[in-house]
View (cartoon, rainbow, N blue to C red):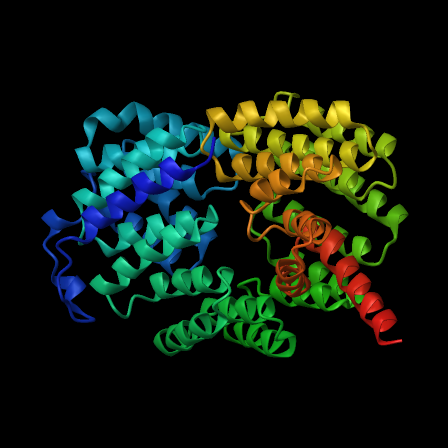
Length: 495
């Protein structure tokens, strides 16, 4: 099943929220009556003040500070349901996510109908209940069409879900309400960048920097967008500006990621080590270690890849981060030299998810889908079509039950790869086109175009694939090798 129905529901809700869009000035958001914004139910003025401080920290992308403020709010008012669900939404700690989500759901009947919608939305997306969650988000946006912060939160979530077209619409509404809203401008710039419109993204980044020149995130975000567009030196300049503005913000990670994509892996590892000095949670620490391990993939040093990722998996296991432990094992399977080695790591990845560590249902199911995708891809590449087909069948069943974008794209990519290996190129193309930004899907789509004679489509896609600069395992495994193969083919054609 495709995700079209979900998109249509969302588009309809945004239209509802936009029907009565007023013309407002940059500062008029301050005068919006409280009845037109989402209520905040708490009997404690001190808790309310801490909650507002936390939301402002989120808007300047200081996530750890936001969580600390929200924890302080709940300490002052243990029945503060909205603060609890926001902690669950923002915390990296799976145990804290579960505890605060459970408590927020218990308290939902004691707050306003709008807050109940917020709780249903943010809890639902962690419990793999996307249909109910999206419906709640849509109802919430329709109920409070003049609440720019709500539209920021919704747009931000949609961008993180890779639903860029829908996120763009929602964020544009937030900016229509509050034209100089830095948080929404930032997220909208990412939406444009991920959609390939770097000129518009950079224009918004210029506005963002002008609005908050004393904050590190405008420079950090600008650096990320410049890196994605291939402007590496300019990206490094922005990241270093962020470090000068606030040395504790953590922009060393952006420097490291940029150096890694540039092929300067040893320098990148040094920067990842510096970045570790500023982590605020064990989840962040493991994620940074994982990023550092990817540098060995780009250097084709398989022994060091396995050694580094085994350490990451052990660390994740020790601190109870099952999803990251599974991810480290999955990446070892992706980079393994043969199917036997890959299957060993895939079994370890699946085992990590069943050891009893706390993990949300959404993260559990999404990681299982990614594991199955690699089972299908590695098996198909090795001509082991029976296990590949079985993995696709399981993924299809998961996709029929979940509206998770991760699960949907995992199914379509796996199905497409198997169909390419079977020589069914037109059917493969239909699946692989679903993932417009994933390096793996793009590579196999390029193969399907090439094999089916769609040379012009293949040429356009090749340019896009070669230009991907996201510091991910897929980029490390696919893009660098694809660029080298293209360069070799062009050199041979010239001779």
